[in-house]
Image (cartoon, rainbow, N blue to C red; front, side):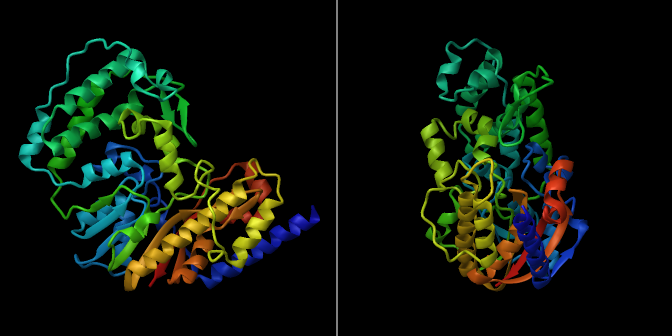
Length: 427
């Protein structure tokens, strides 16, 4: 036990030294910009709640802070998620490119960032809700095992009736907006909600009618689009950013992104309702394929793949060695973490090659903890970035993350590294 305590003290001392080396500074003006909760009422962003999202004002602040005010700036996001970075770039009149491996999210981004004509919006407005009628064997359409639990029969029938009618619409952009409205209400009308690393049954269940909720969501979408100006539509690529080298991407002025945190959360599990009901996946085999090519941040990913050692710093090696000797809740966690940083190193190398000299890369990231040890993802990414071809301008601590009193006691002084930060890099 004494050796473990001494080892943890050494980690704390090392973290402190690296904070100084990478010019750590606290700036809690970013506290409310690094999470999605503060923009639930912002037009377009309010259509669908992304628990991993951040504020578009964060992107605007970063661009202003780094002096990237010209409209010629090319903005890149390898984890486009809710589309915040791309929407912010469009709003500022800048060109942008984004990768998003989740097909549901990629579809939503395209729909939110497209320009629409008055004629197209008028067609959306004129869409008529179908007449309800029972559908036999409605559950048999899905391989999803929990489909019976997610939706009562009449609600699923209403959803399927709307999907069928939307499918008959000829205008693609009109069809896209109608499908977005439907996707945005699925969780609201289901028996489950997003919670932790997946779905949880709702304690208080409102008996919402999919027809009414769809109509209300459509009105919200039309209201938001009617007052949004046109701008350059981003290029959205539905693929893993680890395949970035297969695309002709160059002359990036700045990348602003938040990668999946190394916290074992599986985004394909969290967005199960939208993926299956939106028919972006139709089988568990399809889902496994997508998980295997995604960045490794959870235990459902491909943690058996061969990885090199070029990404490893002395600190990362020490952390992996320490965790491998701890009684973790899953013995695969050290390999998962090692693979996570390997994947991030590969991405950073590709970003360094595609970024202009003098260009920037800003990573919004949260640290995690395993085996009563804080994992300083921000520091580790800064170290690997310098191996990949960037220099670290600074690490900005945006906020401390809350911990339970029990976890606080176990972490001791390492609890101060349970934080969210902006890692600011320059080519």
